[in-house]
Length: 213
Image 1 (spheres, rainbow, N blue to C red):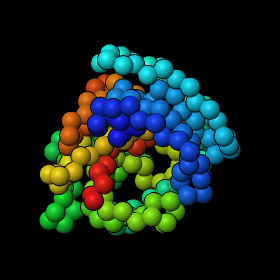
Image 2: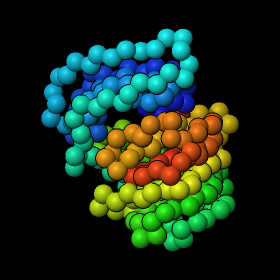
Image 3: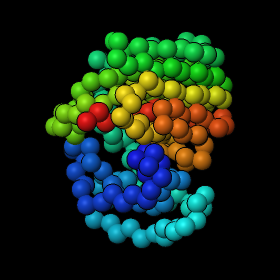
Image 4: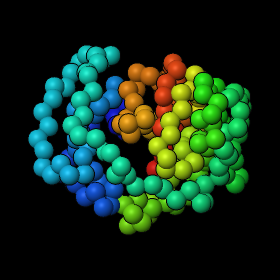
């Protein structure tokens, strides 16, 4: 979904269902989010049919998702990431630097103080793997993610993430709600190097992600 939002286009993803390697589901995405999709490790083949608006900027389609991820998801090894656990309900200008080449800035306010200990701010620039270690790729990332896999979510009253990405990169917004489904892009403002929540929102993870080719 992030690629569709970042490039203001409609994106069809289909035809590669391999849950063991992190490839799961198919979908149709637009600048305003998920139009229709499947996300179920046991779904097998599934036909997706949806309408795509043409020449109607700002039109919004209801998100339709068949199936739910349940407890199935792969997690990234954050050992090499720069990370700081959130300890304050409000922070302005928190900067995480990853060496001399990359940095992320975080401004946030959280409604639930008890949820803070379950979340951390992260920054990374380098090579990570996808598909359970199968595919290496160079990336730059700024994000807010859970500390562990206990399924915690937090309600952010305010949140802005800004990254000092390389000039030739185009970061994509990535954001999941408590049900591990992408949140509606109407809930945040996205610019090339920054993402800002528009309103108080329950978040499981959120950030900016860029492939560094």
